[in-house]
Image 1 (cartoon, rainbow, N blue to C red):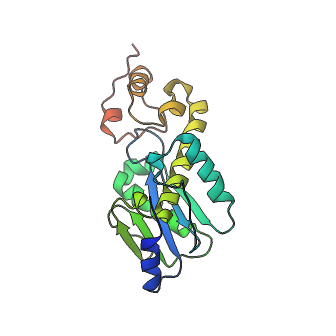
Image 2: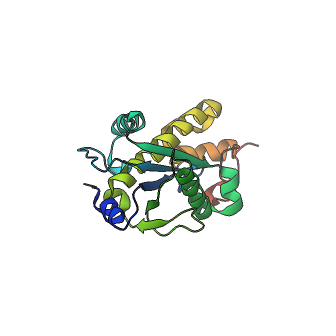
Image 3: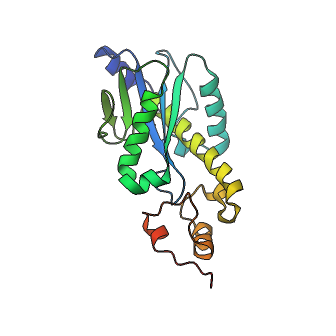
Length: 205
């Protein structure tokens, strides 16, 4: 289970406010890439909070409600839309979302603890932590914020573009999604630079 070991180490280095940061939605064929940033209290403990991928949708929703309603927790979410993903590529778009989330926190954090590899052009001090969402409570919390925020956006897009079933697969390349792409072609939230989208030939005569 994740804990605050890495946050404590950073505080010992003099960084008083440590923000965990994680992303959601790098792999889908449609929709934005999102990032969450979370600063937890120094004494924060939780028996369930973990990497969002290890939790059920019901657990994620409950944790999102808990985190965002806790006055001791600072949090922010940010998105980069498909048109920008296509323009600058998914890696840079992910970095951009992480930077936006970091800057969106109420009160500046002193350092960011980021899941994965070092981030280019990050607007502040940061440390990368591979598999951080399974090690750091702050990053795990950020993974919940990012995932639930994005999932809710994709459910909203399902009402706008019902033929694609975004509420079911959240934009990932499932068989249903690929079949809808072949039948209808891409919609405005598809990532045109992603090969399964750019190669699709609609079945429409």
